[in-house]
Image (cartoon, rainbow, N blue to C red; front, side, top):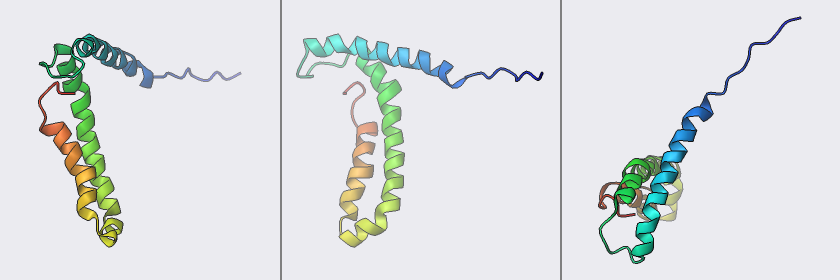
Length: 106
């Protein structure tokens, strides 16, 4: 009788602590938003952490993916006459969200 070696799942191990950290950051930012519903005050520590560690990297990924999508769809948007509008939506807006707004301004 031949026994198969055990299989190990390694992909889920890193996701647990990461998700816990993201959740903790979001929960830390929630009370500040409840006290300042208009968002006119200074950003809190939790908002800055969530923005710097989660939203900015996701914004960068969105900018890269948007650039790829723009390149792939460029022949069609050029034929339709809206290549500039497509670039604005797929590249410029994600890049502005990622690189030009103040840290913690979520």
